[in-house]
Length: 276
Image 1 (cartoon, rainbow, N blue to C red):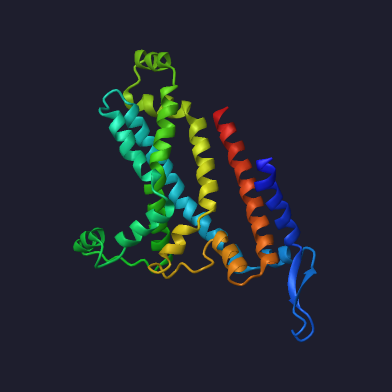
Image 2 (spheres, rainbow, N blue to C red; image 1 turned 60 degrees about the vertical axis):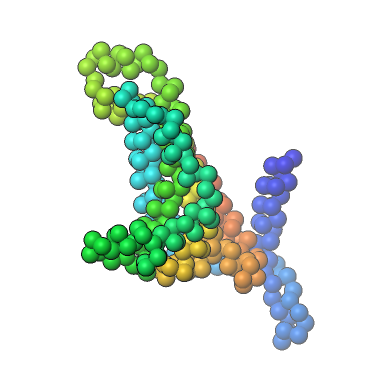
């Protein structure tokens, strides 16, 4: 019932709303009337370059952020699982701590750390002779990716480490007897045997990255290349709550949700095939 009330019902209402537009009658003195326009909002969305550019921005962000974060989390998990690792509980907690920080707070912290003249990190960076400018599109993408990596790597470290604990010890012993070194065992056996967990992490990360909203919203003041429609979520928010074009916002939200669903299905299929 909860799923029906809080997930299915809003989707059905959004789909209904997306078929209407609010139009003024006559010279505008008759007020605004809700008019049925069929699929016109959907056609408008697929022709809207501002809405489509948001997908390109998020796709570029995913290409930078996800491979680095997954590789880093996997490397840390493998190191923690190695026989020479010490104080494993302490390091697991240390890596996990940033995960409990809300994304909004993380964006505020890193906005401060990205500010020249205020941030000690930028001061140290500029002491090397380099300059830091977040005005460019690439700098904004790397800044956002850095926040996401800092925030989410620890969660995936815990996920991968738990999966590594389930790797049969007799398999590792057999690899050792066959002459496999620690590095080869980690890459060829351990990493391969937890490919299901890695696929799951990629799926969750892709879905989470598609919903990017709070971080670019807060970084707008420093990163001038980020505008109020930089991601699909920001575009939908602006269309609904600033322009009050609820029919068009509902249509773009339905398109966006459908794409996330399709993407989740594709990533799941790829993950299952890789695991087989």
